[in-house]
Length: 136
Ligand SMILES: [Zn+2]
Picture (tube, rainbow, N blue to C red):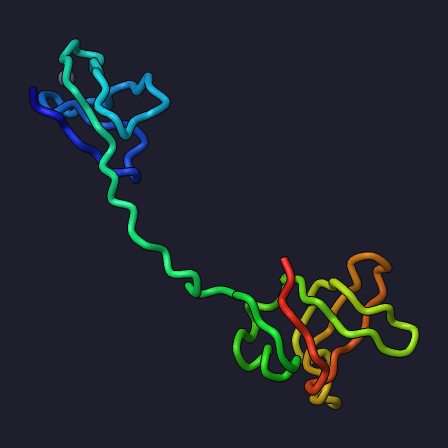
């Protein structure tokens, strides 16, 4: 018995005879299954298990704890839209906030992040030396 393999980027395997997509009627495509193409060719197919190890630190924002300035130099514009854990100061409660923009005021470069607090909606600037953590 020949098993025809296909890769996960193909939604459906192709018939080895006529090249037509073969409807998949199994929920476990990793085990060989019988499929029939629209022209009636029956074959055994199996989803190729070529999962590669995904490194945890692929491009993007990963776990970080340090000063806001370090966070910005590490990730730059990728931070916009991300949530970070911010420190409490004055009336600002601290906690999870969403990054709105980097260096919101060109005249005050020491403010390296503008964030909106996720619970209160308060918008504040984060100074370079403030401690932050990424939070998801
Ligand atoms: Zn066929």
